[in-house]
Image (cartoon, rainbow, N blue to C red):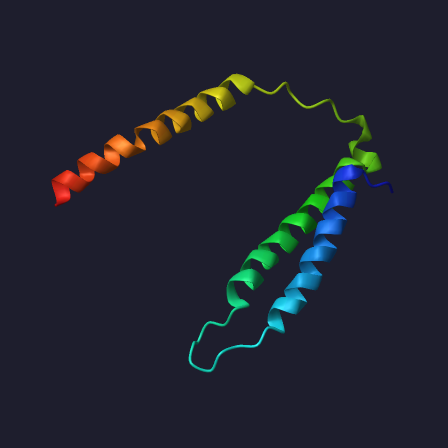
Length: 107
């Protein structure tokens, strides 16, 4: 069973996220605040560990002998990606105008 570059990157990120997750639980908590300083980092690092484990699993499935005879992936349609970026960029450009209009209507 072989592992590719994605699997290696997933293993590295999984190791980093697990080490930092353990360290986030060791942060001292304040007695007054119910949510300590390690709460949000532990959530983010948990998602990072899960995503990197899925990346390793996906790479192992991709390089398995069963998938060796599978046909190539279909061609990607980058035109839709460019259209989506253009829509988001247009929205970002309109934000100052939209924010001013909403502020004048509400106040």
